[in-house]
Length: 414
Picture 1 (cartoon, rainbow, N blue to C red):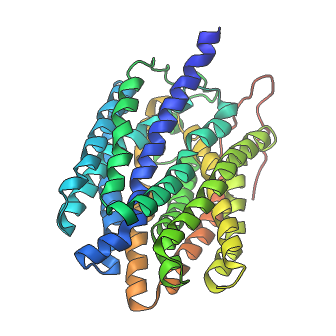
Picture 2 (picture 1 turned 120 degrees about the vertical axis):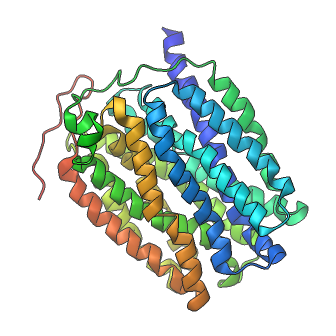
Picture 3 (picture 1 turned 90 degrees about the vertical axis):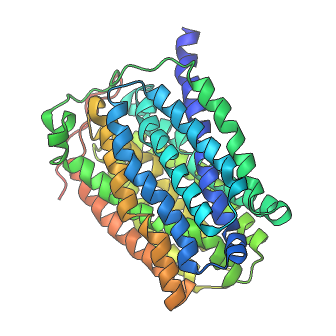
């Protein structure tokens, strides 16, 4: 019995640790990008394009890995992808101009796509449906913790050892964690799913007509636009516009992200699970409300350079990150287990195509034409659109059975 309980927890720890490294590797670049920009004499648009290109190839690779994971061993594909991205991260030592760095960054995106597409389906099959909000809260702790660790690692080591050095530190553990995952049994697909696999939930053709999937995906896409742009440009905004040193800007924003993110990820997942027996669209509802509440605080953060700026950034970041766990739980529950990897692959393609692929470059272009402060209006608009879409999604959520409890009432919304 103890071994049965240990297995899913061990698998969750390994997958969360790999997810942590995934986000560390991404955000290290955000921390050192002013150093890269200075060395290679780049415009704001060019530096923003590094992240856009990374996410573009990441987005394109996802639809190829998703269908493979619905047919073959998920842990083997994760192992190959994690090893590939870790090896490429080490190759940063050989990037001596902008184009070499661009190639390295795009290839890392292909490797990371295998993990991000497949790992959530692995996690979903480890635990019952009514716990998925909380479980994804743990798994997606990697977003704030990894992002903050990348900012802090890049800010500290980049300033003293050069911008390439932090990438070496971020790459090494990936090989060991990927190898350890090979010794974990792979869970049975859909073993805890209570919702019947209808044609709408269980086939590719039905996926096109699945409103629960599409509202979760489009709401996540606009949220990703906002979050992606803020992550890339906030340290630069603090250093160039608000007078912080680069090191203090990275440290301050990294600290905000990690403190907010840990609490927000866990609290958002718990609240979604708590409301689920009472409202079948609870995951959508929690995400929509948190996104809407974040808008006024984001506006204060941008236009108030005084004492209110940092608290406003902190509250806005908290509310943005609050929806991560419930929104991913909504996505996983919107489809059947046997097309889940394919659905997540399609989701990844769309959220990055409409989200953080264009947002860093668009913000860079606005910054070049107007100002960096003006560029942050784009994420604010995206947050408003995301909230509206997710409120619409409440009515389409599937009912989920809970242990010892009846299915939630399918209340009519709207």
